[in-house]
Length: 192
Image (cartoon, rainbow, N blue to C red; front, side):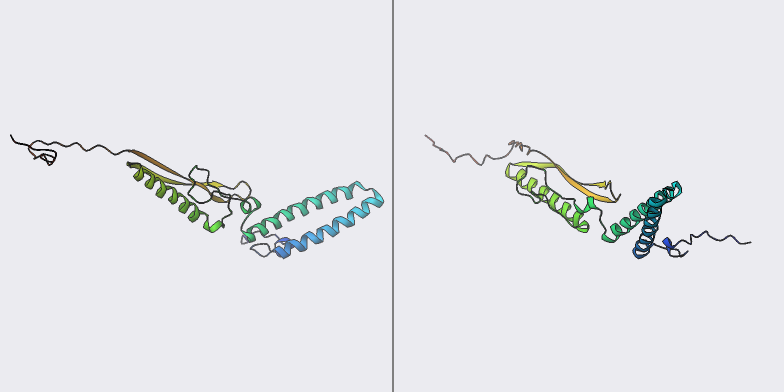
């Protein structure tokens, strides 16, 4: 006797079909179970039967589970959970000349590029500041930070950090041995 895969022939997964459950199937099943629960609730009011009470609780659990599955399908269709939909990005540095000084919503596909661009603004401004102050850059790095959404479990860009280390430019030492002094004779050269 061959071994066949086990399939669930309930109407929830399309009568034994393999694959994803459709939103329409879930809505239909929830509606059918809700009507069944309402029927048992009416019988419960008339008879007070404890068996009906258990059936009602079982149906409510099934309806809740199906509703959660339906919500998950909607979330996957939308591509974002509520936490991700409400996520905003704002610069927390004291640099007044960069973007995102006020909290802004960024499309999920554009977040990494936007954060990288923002951090590049910090890099450019730090380089200009070092140049103005006569300093040289010893080290500069950008880190793009990621986190996991607690609601949907997806990875997202949670921010960025630019680090710039500068130092005073070293003073060039001149050794004048054997060289003619260019300043000689410029002040006053009098022979008596």
